[in-house]
Amino acid sequence: MQIDWHSPLKQFLCQLGLAVILAALLTLCQEGFLFDGVLLGGIVASVATYYFYYQAFSGLKSEAFTPEDAAKMFLLRCYRAEVFKILLSVLTLLIVFRYVDDKTFRTSVLLGYVVISVVGSLTNSYFFNTQETLH
Image (cartoon, rainbow, N blue to C red):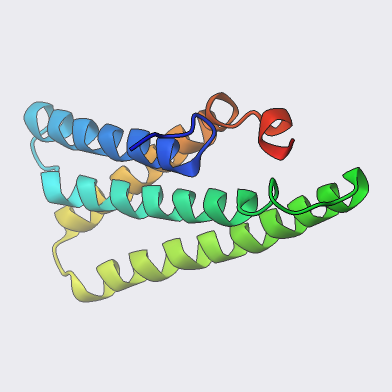
């Protein structure tokens, strides 16, 4: 399978790999964090980020837009994708926090989610060069 360097799949795989490494390191170095909790938080953040970029960038290359219409369409897709990303993250974390009573697991999930979300935000410019993505 060929992975496009500007695809959401590349960032998803990177974040997922980083979530596994973070979970392993935290469970080895710091007692009290659970591997599966940190991994679950990382997966939630990775899936939400993947969904955002898939929705924001899908179809822009194939559709014929004027530059002004392409910018408007891209912003519209970004706003819509960001709303659904937040809803997906909140609903998933609410399910975990509602049905899991273990505070250590909850803390592990939240830590994994926050760290992978921050890493995703910091690596956006590396993975997505919008000039090449939109043309």
